[in-house]
Amino acid sequence: MEWFRKAKPGIDSQEKRNIPEGLWTKCNSCGEIIYTKKIEELLWVCPKCDYHFKYSSAKYIDLLLDDGKLEEFDKSLSSKDPLKFRDSKKYTDRLKQAQQKSGAVDAVIAGLGKIEGGEVSFAIMNFSFIGGSMGSVVGEKISRAIERSIDRNIPLIILSSSGGARMQEGILSLMQMAKTSSLLAIANKKKIPYISILTNPTTAGVMASYASLADVIIAEPKALLGFAGPRVIQQTIGQELPEGFQSSEFFMKKGFLDMIVSRKNLRHTIAGLLGHMRNKN
Amino acid sequence: MAERAHLDFERPITELEKKISDMKDFSVGESVELSGEIASLQKKLEKLRGDVYSKLTRWQKVQIARHPMRPYAMDYIRLLSEGFLELHGDRGYGDDKALVGGFARIGGKSLMIIGQQKGRDTKEKLIHNFGMMHPEGYRKALRLFYMAQKFKTPILILIDTPGAYPGIEAEERGQAEAIARNIREMAVLEVPIVVVIIGEGASGGALGIGLGDRIIMLEYSWYSVISPEGCAAILWRDAAKAPDAAEALKVTSQDVLELGIIDQIIPEPSGGAHNDPEKTAESMKIEILKSINELEKLSTEQLIEQRIKKYRIMGVFDE
Ligand SMILES: [Zn+2]
Image (cartoon, rainbow over all chains, first blue to last red; front, side, top):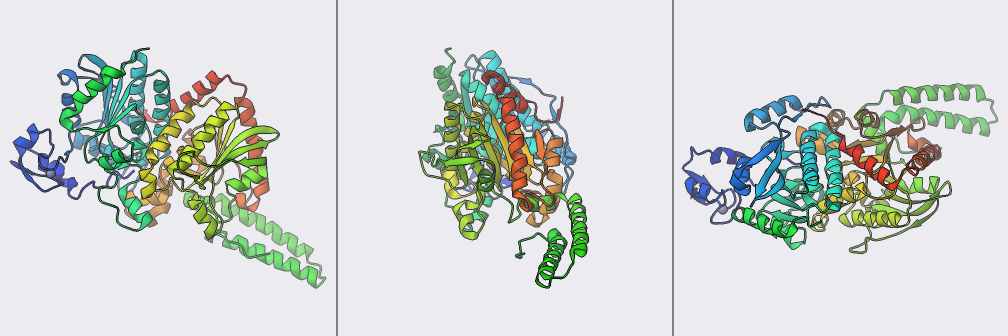
């Protein structure tokens, strides 16, 4: 629920810096100035400090799925405004702006693809759409992705990046955690292989539901993960947080991740895992 | 009558209560006949209470849910069950006192009761961490859920939390994982689960023990994706805008019922549960037993199928 928060100072303007107008790109983490064409080749990973820049859904699909192909499902699902929610802005206006800015209908894309020839049910979240927050549409599309994996008896792969539940849909958003997690209980009983990939940032309601419920949980390096946002924790305890707190590396050390995998090795690693995890029942 | 804690909008009510009680004391002490005056003041009091409580804003209802005198989980366990045998610990890390649980009987029926517990005074508040659970609390609950399943004991859950604890150790021990696992496992538990939100139902902290076959709210409890203060701090950039956030989030029992998330509201006595804990517990007992009796008629397969279907249809979108 901390979707507005900046993972690192200056991440806000990152999108602008990523636009090819700049011949050079400055790393958000270490400040290194990198030739943009070079960092593009490196899949937007800093060669000096391994910082993983934001990567678009289209690029991930290209990177992870055979021939970069996803047969998209439930494309037309769009958010309503059941609470008639309004803060400084109307929720309906916020939605429109997010749609115009991102060109996406909501914060997740889902469908069928292949990884080294094997079919998978794939879903990918988009942080740039209202902080990747989970409202009814995200919950429903994730639920259908889980159901597709059960119906076709194929692996489920979800790549998350989200600040949590979408406050503007109130309690309905909270219930998406229950909806998706209870379908994962069925998938689990039916021995559907499930790999969850956590990218920067994945927190709160998404982390406390489907993102944490996979057989294998992989994180990209240096992602911000966790339940509560760092700012909330800082306010609660009234002191500075330790360096590296709630990073991928922190949660790896604490035993909550299976592996930390660099972007360039993601596809290869997933394919290797699926080779062992195909449902043999 | 002792001076008791009250909320701002309760002030005229407590003042009138005090006046009546003073008059009663006086009439006894001085042997003066004041029964007529007292009766008319009593009538006035009831009307005033009715007026105040029928016009409450959402934020005021949140205040009642947090009333310093509101009954907590252990109060209800004492009032509506017999022979509570408290069980402790998650068998891995520790015993989270923000969560109480154990076997008890209600109307002779054996139940597993789990509840989030707050403290009444400062010392108790700290012991129970203000009802904010750590991962070991969620894991203790899960251990007791599995035990209930093993002995085919229906589960009653009493929810009252301002949220899961947002702290360093909670993150270190996997707050998100603990909550996620509970939600998933509760979906397929083979015994009936009745959930009653008795005070505050904040976010994942509540849902982490909150999935069930019947979800019931006490009239002046609230249930939301985030606390009004948390939402105000993020969207209004000002926690003081919590009253606005409570309105926008639609957090009251009536709102949540209208959104189709809960099954039932249990009305509270005039002035809220704290004005008559016994009566509140009695209403709860009746509804809890009714729900459990209905749910026990289902086969295990039907029970789980209905539970998952209940959540499957939640959400509002265009297609
Ligand atoms: Zn760098």
